[in-house]
Image (tube, rainbow, N blue to C red; front, side, top):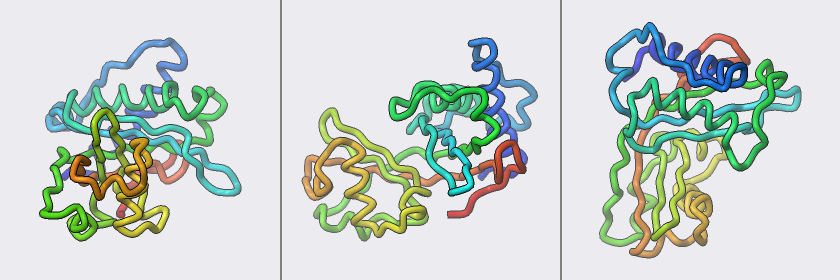
Length: 202
């Protein structure tokens, strides 16, 4: 479990990383880390959402599904990649930063969902708790736990959408060749651009 102070630090770090990279092209070195556990390896995703009068829209989302780097370093890397290297979007421009909300999702290590039959998968995961990773051969897709909640999906739809995210047919989860992993996340985000950081319930 991470405190709101630790979550606030990571969200502020993500924004500073993007601002510094935009200004100088260099990656910041995390300083004044409030707790040693933020130096432990952890999976993390940074999500950028653009706020407009008509609502919010995704502006970038990239991260590390598995513990690969210390959490603070992974947060910096993910923030920069989400802002400048997400292939779905053009790089973020400076003028946009005033209308972008930063969100950091700290992930637990993924655990394979093992079932007797693939048809049991929907009852072995839970929308509102789990994120998913689907793998088949070279294909791999990930959806964070907050995604199915935001779209109002049930468990079967969540599995199908994760398969499509991987570039697979929506019913690929019914194949025994498809591996499904689940994880949970603690989510911290700005309530408004540069605003107060809050922990987001699912």
